Each structure stands twice: as structure tokens, then as C-alpha cells.
Image (cartoon, rainbow, N blue to C red):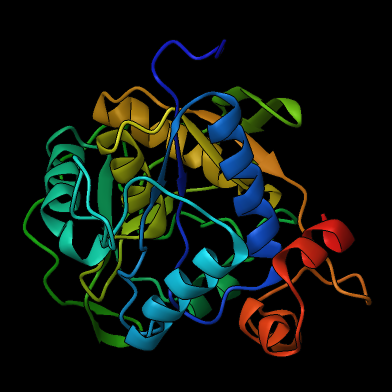
Length: 291
């Protein structure tokens, strides 16, 4: 009997920015096992909105490698389903609608800061994030505001730059949730993470917004993903609240590391599913040795 109030819906959400590696497979395998254990549906979503990084050949390779490894999803870009399309690049109308709601309700503001600007302005990087906490350079004064105009170019210290749109976090507010694997989690807005981008300066939705909108629209009941995204969950919970959406449950998995203790990334080509398959490894062997 499933503990979830609604029929279980889990998802696999890879980005076609390189070949999938063994760390992806382990996290995805846990997602599939949890969907099966709860008698639920597994969804494959192709997160292909970052046109600066993804390549079309990686989409076909992604599906082929997942099928080879033993994954079996019931909805996805290759088989359709009631919540199609399953390519994020075809779902921009949903992201723009969410952005307009955030704009109308005063949750976002334009920001012309580059990553270098933020690194230079911040006193120190946050240990839990790749980037330092945003220092509030472009943050409007006061408790509420309305964003005026669109993402038109503005003058900045670095010349003409299209602004990104940033979500203003409620400083000092505690965001807590119970993770299905790690238990109670707690983050403080403005301390553990700062104002974050929801729409990039190149007119593309940021991961936080696209992920939250799609998981809600596809009625995902539990998100299974890596432990490196625990802080992202706190950010996304703020977005769910701002958009009036019910968040899913969360289950974060420990990250797989290489022999030197570094977490696996797509640059680890020797541990990609494609390379392991070519070397003669079988999915059963890989699961028994690495999972």
C-alpha cells in the first residue's frame, strides 16, 4: 500500500549535455524502484532548455542508454502520455505563464549582475553552493515591488546587458521539509542561499523555475534526485508557494564518487554508460558491483 495520498508519479529528468554516467544510473534506478514499489508511473522528461550546452545527438543516446540499462518508463518523449510534450524546449508557454504570475505578484526583479560581478561583490562563497550568495546589488528597496517592462537591455558597469530576473527570498525565513532519505532538512533564506535567477539574461527559464513548473504540471508526487540538490529543494519550495502550487515529496540520494573522492560528472567518460557498455559490461554486473 502506497503512503502517498495520490497515485504515485515519479520521474527521470536528465539533461542532454553529455553521456549519462553511472551516478545518473544509480539515482535513476532508485527512482524507478520507488515508483515500482508504490505501484506508480515513471515519467521521462528531457530537460533540454539550455541550448548553449545540450546537443541533439545526446537525446537519442540518452534514451538508448537508459533502455539498455533496464529502465522502463510509461510516459516520455519517445512514447507520449497525458502530460506531453516531454521535451522542456516545447514547454516554454508554461514557464512564461509562471514568470508572469511571479512578476504580477511582485516576487521578481531584474538583475544585470554577471557571475563575475557577484563573485567580486560577495565576501565569500557559500559552502553548499557552486556560486556565492547574491549580495543584493540590484535588489529593490522595500518589502514588495512590481517589475516594470520586459527584459530589455539595461546599462550596467559592464556595458549593455540583458537583465536576468531574480526571485527575492524572504531573508531569515526558515524553509524546512522532511526528505524521504535524509530526514528533516532546514535552510535559512538569505543565509544558506540568496536571491536566485528564475529567468536568464538569454531569455531562457532557469532550472529552478522550469523544474518546479514541470513537476507540478506533470503531477509528480515524489522527486528523486541527488543530494547536491537539497538546497535547490528549498528554493523550489519558495517557488511552489509563490505560484500557489502543491509541492511533491522529495527523496535525495548520496552522490557517487570516483576513486579520488570527486563526485561523478559527465566529464568522467570512462564511467559513462555508453563507454561501459562498449567495454562489455552488462547492466546486471554494473548494478551488482556499484549499487
